[in-house]
Length: 144
Image (cartoon, rainbow, N blue to C red):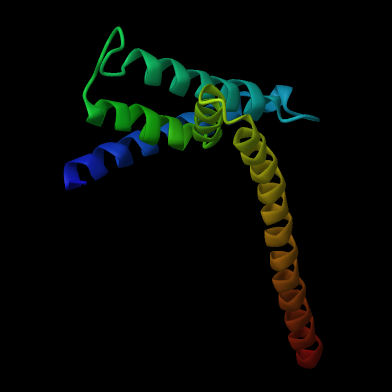
């Protein structure tokens, strides 16, 4: 891993992140009740791009490119745009290798653990917020 490779991935990630933000803002009108803006143009498109580009640009693919270009697009751009694309590619690799059980565990564990992690993060932060509010209220009451 060289500094140049790290820089290439970083620039791709920055561009992917910016693209995600812009698409999210543009998709707000259709994401009122269900996050369609995340599901369709971000997660589904990012998954398509990583699958399409990753296959097309293999060494024996129709349009082989350098490893740095693959890292730029697949890790940087797609990774910044959506981490779901990496998850989807890894799951497809398991399925293509007839590891259906492992693919199922990957899907179930990813969804359950990630939703659980979000919930745990929320609960933890809510505890900090509650404590901060109590401290602020106590300080305000003492000043009165």
